[in-house]
Amino acid sequence: MTKQHFGSAHVPLSPAVRAGDFIYISGQVPVGADGTVIIGGIEAQTAKVMENIKAALALAGAELSDVVKTFVILEDAREFAAFNKTYATYFPQNPPARTTIESRLMIDIKIEIEAIAYKPV
Image (tube, rainbow, N blue to C red; front, side):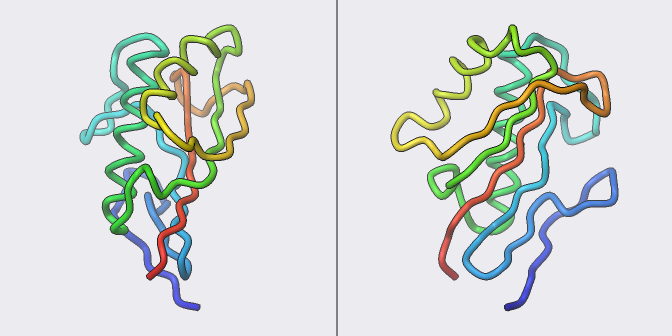
């Protein structure tokens, strides 16, 4: 099996890595292309993270419908309902398996999401 690394980041990681038929998306955070955290609540930050996931998937020739698993880290579990409302709009049918936890994050943000997609080569 060969691995392909896609994209570059402001930190030492690959936004997307293809390993065979699977694509692993590094934890995406609510930042713009310049690395600046976007301003806004959990809904705005969730939307930006999902757009960043879409962009990382595209680097490897995949899209959100190929996502089979996500891992979500919320900074505050009390924002789960608001997060869920926005997140659901990105997976209107057949949502992926998901784990959601509450934890402090590395920078001052409300959310981070990593994803695994399945897209045969």
